[in-house]
Image 1: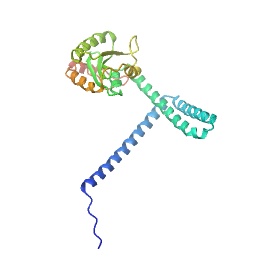
Image 2: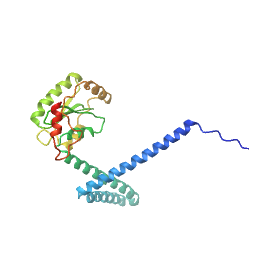
Image 3: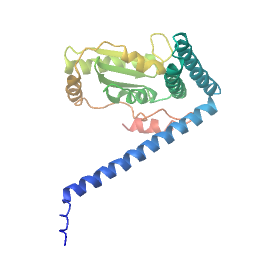
Image 4: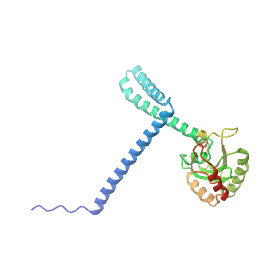
Length: 251
């Protein structure tokens, strides 16, 4: 009789099960992302009547240009797939930007909007919301990144000025020569609109190395948070502020 094959090691079986579980999780996450994108597209198209014609126009325009350039050199059937691919990317880019602009427009002027924008920054920023604030829900948020320390304020300018000055002094005592920037979010003079805040921070010079960001965060962690109890994201239009203000006064 032929010899029975040796049993598979337990470790190999566990590895296969783990790999299978990882694939299932990846498929589920991908399906969820597609559902979220589709939902965002449906909502945006309902609110933005120009979205679909604009995306189609960008797609057709880029594809036509690529086909035309290829036609000049007698390679139109080679350049056509490239044009289609670039057209799809262009349409997706338009969709993403218009969704982002819509979201920022809805959040503009709401308490907590600046903190929400900071927490969605890319590039390894370390954000601490509401490090200083008032009972009127003015707030100063702290972001640590390659430029150094950035204090982002939202609220009434006349109340934010002393808050920013006080917070700058507290931070400067702990970080030495690391640059400190201050930004006031708003639509007034010398203010940065909420939608332009990520771009404004991205343009700041890079003064510190990535490894220093964690060191700065640890140094500033000892500063007690004395700010207002700001919501984690923008409050919905028409939301009652009474409960939030009561919480602030108790602090």
